[in-house]
Picture 1: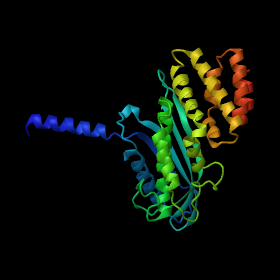
Picture 2: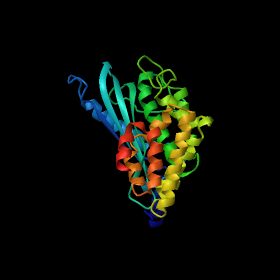
Picture 3: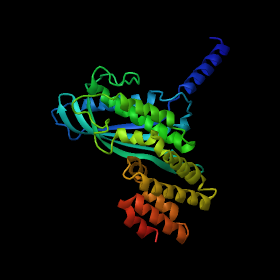
Picture 4: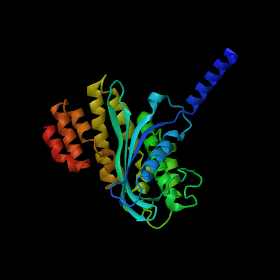
Length: 307
């Protein structure tokens, strides 16, 4: 073959690969310890492989990602019970992080467990998702990919929000589209306003509700103006993060018990203690006051380690 043609082919392939570079570096783990031993556990290894391929090989946006720009995320699908033949009830733990500028630190964006995932899976059934036909032909089978797609868009939305003001809006709207067209069948829960106060419906509703626009300012300010500038301007960054805590206190007073506040504060106590441990006595005092109002379960920890 002509060397020029080989070079052209390799360059074309390289460009094609970059243009189709996926956004997520996801690891999906399926745990089936609670499923009866009469079920062949090989099916869950197959499911795990298919879900990993689904999350990592699908293009979730029109943007081009380099390998080192992919969003690191983990999904733990823990099968709690087998409700019927090929029908499972599970919890799904979602974790995602984004790098902090000028450091090796990965700051958590999501650390959340969704306890309401019921789905149907037959080994080797296609793991597919069509945002124009979320319900699919079998609602219980479609629910599995609808849940994973929903959290893929939530991860992207929060990541984009953390780098530019309200940058994730397009992805939150895609997640909202899944909520609006979610599969409906016996056992499926978590998509509707009457499915409880902490579910997929309320999480995305909080992020697209214009009354709650301040939340997007909080996300951007916390990560971009706070954590990302901690290395070069620690004092100013700590002040920005303290400002976001005050914003969350005000938000909570006006909008008590919203899901997003608890979601945002999930597992941030160690990070916040690390941020304010080197602060002035006044900064520590203000941080403890604010955190005692928006992260009540960790109040004792804040008081002990920031005194």
